[in-house]
Image (tube, rainbow, N blue to C red; front, side):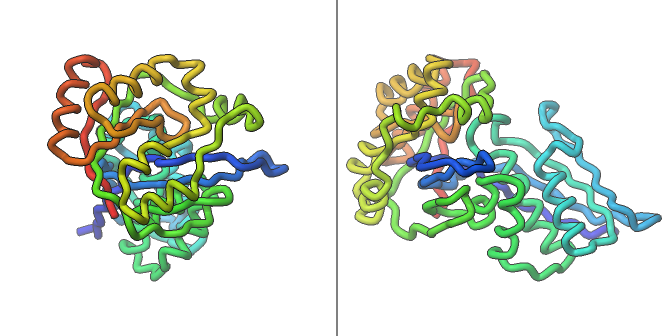
Length: 291
């Protein structure tokens, strides 16, 4: 029987997202407080024999909106690792999708991270997480964080990660409307001189002191200045999150997902039910955080 490994790929939200500069190659320099939440895709990896020992990667999913070709970050992760380590066996990747696609929740990046970690185990490669993160940054700014997990300050283009060990107790409700947001469009239209930058140091200080009220009052994402202007529904969802009891609300990543922060799971679940009644076409999910 072919060897098989199953890995969970967790979604992430940005408790703070600041863009502090831009490199000549077009990459933006970030300072972002990233947090994994208990919403995940399941990645099943199965070793397959190859006849000619050529590169063989097959991809399937239970979700018909997931690309099953070389454009998928999970495919790219497998290809990168196979070429890096000279893997001669083939691999079949099956993605069981729960994280909404194109949501600003790092769904593609966390699938790639899960492939890195799963193949590391499946083929006995022996890479440390640091080594996998060095490979992961070649695929995207969120991949290194998704490999590390938990809570972290991400800097540079996402490759410089500082773990954050202290967090206030909190629970999340996410709302992802059925609109697509182009990350490329958002960054191309970002005007750094015109935005209000979040105070990342104060956010981190409030987190270390477990002060949820202060932390939620400081939440900020400079990309909202572009995405909300184009999609006013995002502002509406933020306001409704506050109306149903969130201590704070913010857009995650480049959008369009909005999340609310709650101090108990009971409040989060109650808010989830109210949001689903108001927005039946919107993906709504209560989740805990992963420390």
